[in-house]
Length: 274
Image: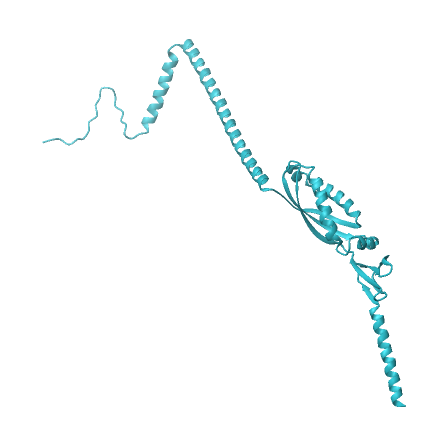
């Protein structure tokens, strides 16, 4: 009797364990910032989008596919050409996320790796179309306008595939080697032109100074000639006296100069010969 009771209890425990295992295998969790799409072997992908929490599904018949709906970054490099046929290396940093209500459509058409299938192609398409509208110089000086056009076009294209672009920014923009060398040569030429312009302006200023000096000398000569005509040789004699006075003043400061009255001699203490 006791043996039969223990067997019955064992059978009940085994049944509970089996039921518990079946129940656990029919549960799945959807974490925060995620959504789930259910694939049914008989009905295909259901249009229902499952939110966060723990949910039931039919094992073997149904399979939950979990999607991350939080914003994720992606860098997309592209090589394209400008309006003046210059090679441009440009990289976009994109923050993207799927539209939750369109997850069944995204999974049906694109699959789980939808970003790999969509973002590189549409980014390259939009960049080629926008960059071709600007010259190489305009891509630098009008970068905000370029970024705005890329943002508008790329957001519209991504919306066709059920994607939301939270942020689009140009993180890298360089040109080909030939264009870089041409810019350097242009800068050198501009510096040389500035230097030549300075030399020309300096020569012009020197020319003007020489003309002004010559005009001053000519006017001085005219004034002297006029003075000579009015005062005769008296002006020349006055200038001679003034010059002599200046010379005498300068010589009076020298110790090696001796003044003697007219007709007198200087006796030097020289050694005599025997």
